Length: 260
Image 1 (tube, rainbow, N blue to C red):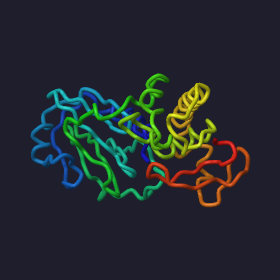
Image 2: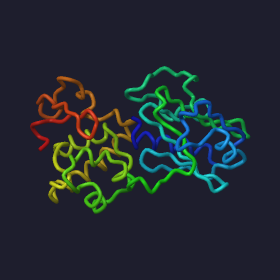
Image 3: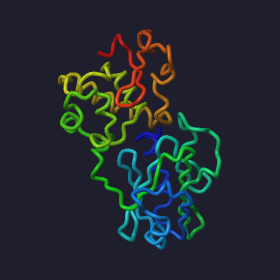
């Protein structure tokens, strides 16, 4: 968290600052600036520029600027986007629910007096000037079945690890992956290249439905599997005790009965 769904909320919230002209950059935490960019360099590139658009690619939020630069905003596991006094979302799974301005890692202040901030208690996000968007795979909201098969469903790597690889498909996080595979009845530890045509259709169908459901219901923490993603939790579908494993470097919950 946040995953592609949350960043889509952030993108919609960032639309509120399109047309705003940047008056000042506040970057008190150099750790939060990526690829060696310093706060003075960032200010020199941003101050005076106008926000011309807000885009999302996977978990990356991009602000297009009148200067020709692009500002990439990453939110790690606990970052929230705040415009003025309003957060794009109020709740993030696995993050502190305390609202502390001391966690403001980066702020754009506009000539109008409005501002845009990233508030991140764990400092796992970051800000980057002109990010390399080509290092990301197709966005999860627009990836086609043929792209899914060609980019994700290849090799002996576990299926879930492929889904989490942002260079293969951008925007799937741990909660989306577990929910999709649980609904599709696919074992997250299966070889990525082992899916047949019917498996691919199920995976594609449930990926679309999960994204739609999460957007409608308030975020990636609203899945049907989510309340059972605890030690000793049971499958909401058939009552079997869930398997808890580490796959793709992430804690993974799945049903040993219907996920094969």
